[in-house]
Length: 78
Image (cartoon, rainbow, N blue to C red; front, side, top):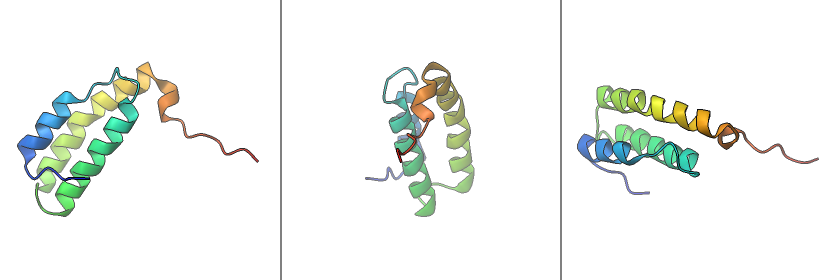
């Protein structure tokens, strides 16, 4: 996974996330990992991290509303 190094790059990636696609959960999870990694490596500040996470929330919520099963983890069969 390549970590975008600037807040602007992450903002652009956030704008491209689409909550209506079948793989929205995967895209949102991947984006969140990139944001966390960028903050861990000090590419973005904690304030910028918080802003991105707050802006991600409505996208994640809409994905959940449109595809409720996308967020359920499969139950292992015994």
